[in-house]
Image 1 (cartoon, rainbow, N blue to C red):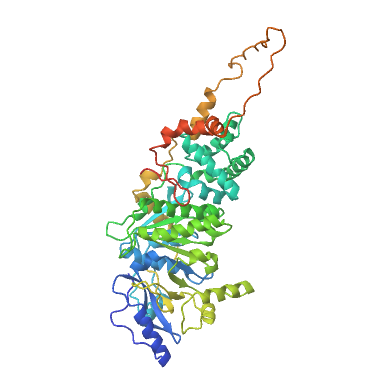
Image 2 (cartoon, rainbow, N blue to C red):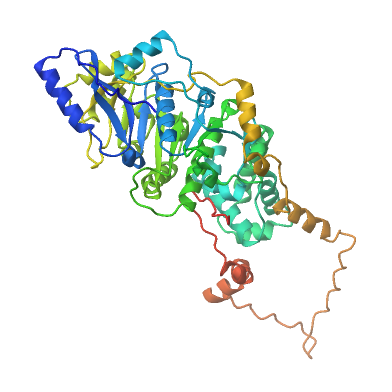
Amino acid sequence: MPSVTDKATESPATTPAGSAQLDAIRAGYASEGAALHLGAAVVDGHAHADAPVRLPLSSLNRHGLVAGATGTGKTKTLQLMAEQLSAQGVPVFLADIKGDLSGMASPGVPNEKLAARSADVGQQWAPTAYPTEFLSLGGLGTGIPVRATITSFGPTLLAKVLGLNDTQESSLGLVFHYADKNGLALLDLKDLRAVISHLTSDEGKAELKALGGLSSATAGVILRELITFSDQGADVFFGEPEFDTADLLRTAGDGRGMVTCLELPAVQDRPQLFSTFLMWLLADLFHDLPEVGDLDKPKLVFFFDEAHLLFDEASKAFQDAIEQTVRLIRSKGVGVFFVTQSPKDVPSDVLAQLGNRVQHALRAFTPDDAKALKAAVSTYPHTDYDLSELLTTLGTGEAVVTVLSEKGAPTPVAWTRMVAPQSLMAPSDEAVVAQAVAASPLAQTYAAVADRESAYEKLQARLAAAPTPEEEPAPAPARAPRREESGAPARRQPKEEPGMVEQVVQSSAFRSMLRSAGTVIGREITRSIFGTARRRR
């Protein structure tokens, strides 16, 4: 783990104002408990190793933001934070969008530039590999396959993936409700397609009508979107065995936290899918973990790379659900860091939940960039730095930092020269990754696809058992009309319209509810904020 040298390097000469600023930084970032060492404060253009910038482990469940333009060092900041968390026994989850983070499984390679930076920031650097688990969505990659069932994924997240509007999302929720009520397990895409096809068929029209707010036209739109989604190869992401998010909370035999690296380069052309899949993981954790309040160190820290993809074209309801998840999951001992290019990529209500900020350089090439820069500056506490200028001139591997102290108060804004990662700052060799996957205890659980009886098989069996037109009984002959004794035709009495209660009792929806009441009562169908179903472990 990086640390400040035992005998701090003598600080370069500073102005009186600079000395006062350094004293404020030293006091603000002093930490009695365990902390991440992010780097050294920079004042008057020089790094001061005796003014370390730290992030307390106890503040990590207040969440955070790592932002900055391309090439400014966001990924390396993510890497050095993950290393130190692992070294202190905290499991870490990383979304590896570009394939760079596999280097955590290999020790770093020393060089002159690295040695100079380490000396500058007071870091005792040593090449170190960290215990790393490699996963991949549906097996698209070398990692262990991660899948989710359609029921667990839920209608809200699935609607985001499919690009459905609010009406269509509500209708999809009715389809999930119908499947729940009728015992039709939705494990993969073909199950959901089978249920919708049934509801829009001649045999299912009555059940479709009984659902109320679901029209055949809307059901048809959803079905077409599912078929397109399936044709794009999305079938591999859904099914069983479903990934148990408790496996993200493991530690290695030596006590270090396991680093779980989800490979995503193979699905870069499906940004909505992998961003919502990450949100499913977070929502599932929210379901299963107990309330623990504030801990000395988090149970897990979740890094959400390329976070803007999650919020692109998201509905207000979806954004509200993310905000609520982020706000509530901190009491479960989970910290969430959003990693993106600009703070404006994250909605303000979500941004307000992020107490820890590591801001790398921003660019101001366009009027929109300048507006974003001004907005970013306005979110920082008062500081002696000229942030409007500083944020556009930061060097690679430098950032403006402010975090929450152990007491929960914002620390002074600190221009920080970050420490260097100790693992490989490049992708690991393919043989290293393959060896890690082969040795993983998760491989036996998740490698092979399972396909038990679910909605598709049940509806196919029902269709096969239905009588053919030749087998259906002939209609009964029409009965001759009755006549009065006089021989005159009898006058048909007008049919009395049923009252409101009779209409409700006689409705197919009410009868259906009565039929399923025995099943529904006593069965827990709990939905999370996102509509994901709680599964029995």
